[in-house]
Image 1 (cartoon, rainbow, N blue to C red):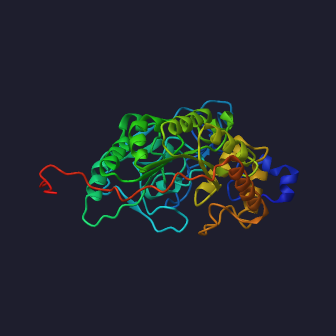
Image 2 (cartoon, rainbow, N blue to C red):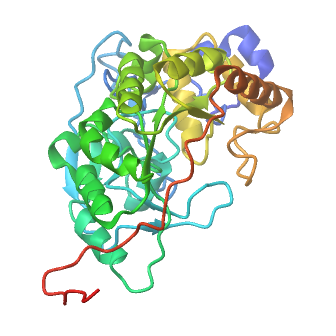
Image 3 (tube, rainbow, N blue to C red):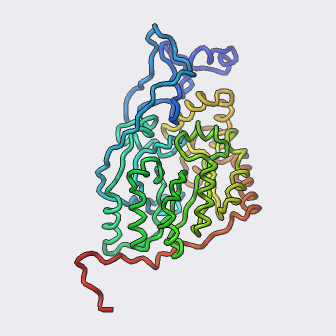
Length: 389
């Protein structure tokens, strides 16, 4: 029978004797904690919210607990073709500055432990943990489907957001080139697009994006969470390194493409002290706008992030979690519009004030104008009657 770990028991060292789960319950001695795998973000593959029970590793009584220094077998990345029937996803969220988006992939090999898209894998009967970053789904038909949807009578254009759920430039994009196909369609229709990515691979498509930018049809934001390469390697194991992201900002800016930076997420006592440095480095590289998001831990991410902290930052795990609770009314997450991305309380207010002052000082308040929608026009298709005008 498990028992809760109280402050008194922690002071006696009980929490060191018995591993603790995300609910503060001591695990039986026969149950071993999951160990971090090199090159992966999540520590475990705990089941999603629609699956009953748990799948912990167990001590067989012979080999004993594995050493944390021992390399676990690498996990292969698999890619399955997603037979989707539509390309554009619509939303009405008041927290989001767009009403339509497109995601070329489900799951993301970047493996960012804090990714708020992880819970979507539960809809597929898969784990938001390691499954999310190793069992990917690709939509190679997305460009064709997008062209069909944009050609429908009555379609009204507005900026299409790429990278809102999973990264459009994650590693498998190098071979699959779905995002590039989507951009080719958007360019042909003169349709505005915004991109958020952690990958320098976005520079591969400068040829398309620069031509669209000349017409005020494209804008890109690079997400830069930390300038510490060692922290980035643990927290975002397969994403582009921070120096290369800054170089991508520079290349995009030099190509005339409006580029901003997202310091997201800011995690109390882990990377939030880097906020001003991230913004300053981005401004120096050529960014003209900036944003930030306070760490969000919806659904299964609470447990996944807690596991990650205990595996990679055990000395300050409790402090980080307590500060997160200070910004979330005593909980690890509050799912409320207008509050989800900023939090509440003195700590959250101080972070917001620091951001405002830094943005003003660095000139990151600039905007390069709204993207144009008046240029939208479906290109002629084979068999269409030529206009007499």
